Image 1 (cartoon, rainbow over the protein chains, first blue to last red):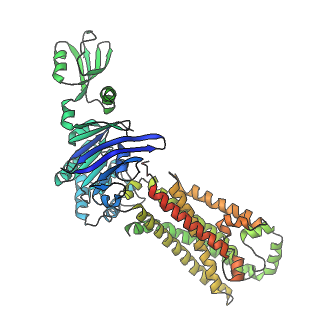
Image 2: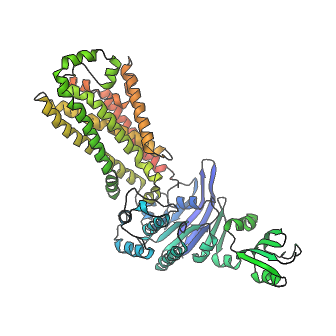
Image 3: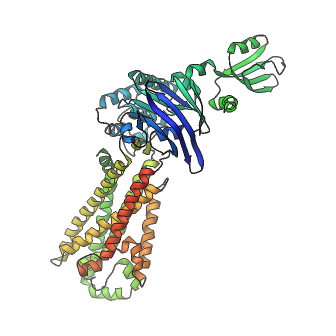
Length: 295
Length: 265
């Protein structure tokens, strides 16, 4: 399988402050690749370098086998990009902006544009200024997909979309992927990446700390448990491998767990509990308690 | 071509507004001419009491003030000042607007090179400024000819009118460079007004100073109407200085813009 994106030792410093350091990974043709990390880890820096919005301090990256800086306009013909921030030109209607966007590509995009707008329930005749954040985001989605790109780059795409729209959005991305498009998507929400991606790169403090298949990530899924018991239990009741960030207050145990959930369940079963929470920990927590040790 | 068209579309309304402002300004000044002309002797005497510096800043030259074009050059000072603000706004806004409205990510990830974007934007601005100068000059030209009754040198008038356009291009190129060099400009008007009035203030120093050297530092002093009226030509040294400023600013803008990191806001 050929690589759509190849990143080699990409480094970017903003003056003296760190952007990304020695980032290397490849995205294979036809896959949906997740790029996750806490805020400020360097996701956007990497993506913006790929798009030639910023220039690397050292290292290089190629897309479709072309240099991402030198051949940027050529690459851009086949790339669709959805920035994390919404944008608008003063006084422009949705369809004006989309037509403007389409005018850069040498193909007829009008059919696809209408189709996408319909799917996302987006009114083409509204002024962009008057749209809500979520609707502006939709304009961005249509703009990024209307030319049926071979590579779709998404920077925190679901920010500001309600759950229903997120679902439609992920369906769209999956369809694009089935059509043959490669997808690179950044996010700080693990759950979101797990839903759609086949592989992920995890970035922290500007460095890639892990490349994993999503299946591996799911096997070692993380849960935050909070267990309230009727009686005061010994502090080491839930002391098993994979537990960390243990906090004990009166009758309440709170911890993050990575491993076989049945082990926890069997421990719980032998005690009388009054309340139980099992949540997805946010990525920050996971990083703090697992990946930080592995660096 | 699409970027060019888009730029024209986005700036057309404001350009029409500026044309209206310039024409109104010119018209107001000219409408006083018949009045002043009838009492020219009194008026000239009155003006002799003006401090020479004030007269110089306002572009009043007693010797030619009684002729239509001489009087017009007094109005021209203010037209050029307004035109400079228009051009500076256009220059400062052209790149900074994209970062402010977060449209830079949109435009710069399209299949067009940064050089191509700048080409299109600059061409659109020059077209808009040329249109401004042309519409204004033709309109005011007809008005003056109506007043002047035969006493109207078209060649001189064209030379005078073209200085509006050249001055605008100089200010535009300076604004462009500022726009490209700045990381983010929150609002265009305060920036462009400060730059223009800085040069205008410098202009006041330049006319009152003994030496001509200061004139090189402010584009407002590159084209003295009285020189043009007397000699039927521009002062070469200043014309060249102006052209050099434009070339250097534009080239620097290209180099800078093509190397610039475009940050998300």
